[in-house]
Image (cartoon, rainbow, N blue to C red; front, side):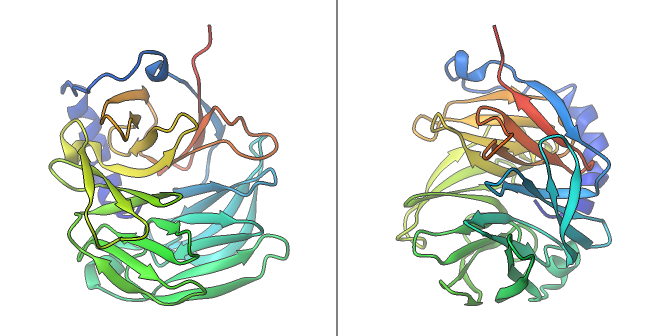
Length: 305
């Protein structure tokens, strides 16, 4: 998520290079690594940054442009699209909590380069469409997570990279730590927080304790040349593994957080930016749904037979 202009500009070159580079992985169990079949749900949107299921039959997506303006849109299982909220500058990470969708705003390269703290977290009532700001003072908020105590965690992967924290109920964001590299996607699973870096020579999956976010971190090195993979968003699968969108590689990487074993489960997804397993009416819970900077929502379905 984020730095769309940078990654789109180098995407074509990276794809060419990756075609000549063998990317070794530590093999996970064969069944879990079976290649998935990728199909299109809908296309023709803008630069899609993130996604989250609303639990009521919709897939919410952050739909932006290289100029920064954008919207929060809802995709139905049949691929039809409608707008939930428009006039969103730099839409970023989305988290749905009941009838509320939390959305990062101000996730722009310009803000990251200029260190401009104009980023917010906005709350959208999914019943009424009402939008309000719950957090301010963030610089280029990209990834978003809601912690068990109701507070928020955001990431910044350009400039003074790091994680920021917003107290439960909202307020001013404060920088939490800057020692993890170019952190991007955030996944919260109970008392465990996962985040992944994007622009490192060796990118890493970091595992943090939600109750001690400034404390010790367990890190797993991800395979392949880091700058040619560009890990972006991530999600926890029903099998307990992490699934990571490799933006420039156009692939989904499965990582066992206990053993560190990895494998690619889907490829050929141009500039994939976010991933999530289906949830809610009309969406298959065993299928990984993706967004891409090419404006396409795709479905990576499990192998059959």
